[in-house]
Image 1 (cartoon, rainbow, N blue to C red):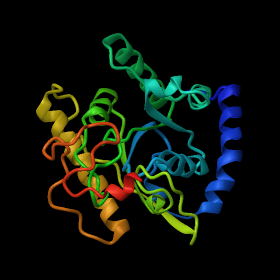
Image 2 (image 1 turned 60 degrees about the horizontal axis):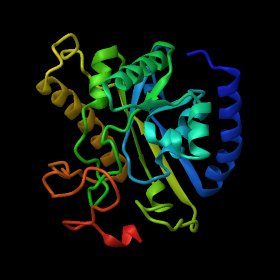
Image 3 (image 1 turned 120 degrees about the vertical axis):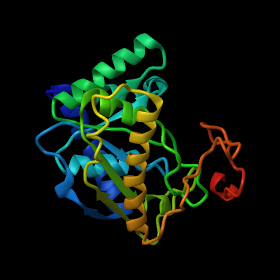
Length: 255
């Protein structure tokens, strides 16, 4: 989409406000910039470990002169101040009803067709994994990729959780932390494009996205990811909300 005067002004204001704060809080180490598509729109899929992830990822994309646009819950657009910022920067609301879902898809296509980056968290929410590894993915990013033909680019990051642990109310300013962002190569979905969008196809595409993203997170952490991704349903956890401190999850993170 062509940037409106309103959205440019809103991005400039937010960047002018947040970038100095982010630079003060975090050192930056950005890798894999050559993997960012520059001649086509794409879907970026980051991991999700703390509430400040969107600011970290948005900072990264804005510095690459790519306006970050998120697929965000429609309810967030009704939150005072936050909702105004989301609307001013042309973020994409996700509606759950059929008519709304169609409008969301149309808005997402507009971002991609204009050569922009649509950021979708494939896990759908903050990971429930006790060790903060990417958990089971949802099929939304895969569905949109197959519907639009847009490339899917995994974007892993690590370090922001040391500033604000998952669901914590306390920010840890000192010592100054480093956040690393690593962009991977686009996920190969070529054999799935054009096929009927069955559950098997969507699950296969989703697993490929999550495999690529998890491998990148492992590289940043210099650790081997668990052989099986955490699945909240199998652990008796709620899919949304903060009340999920079960099966080994550290309750101190909720303090």
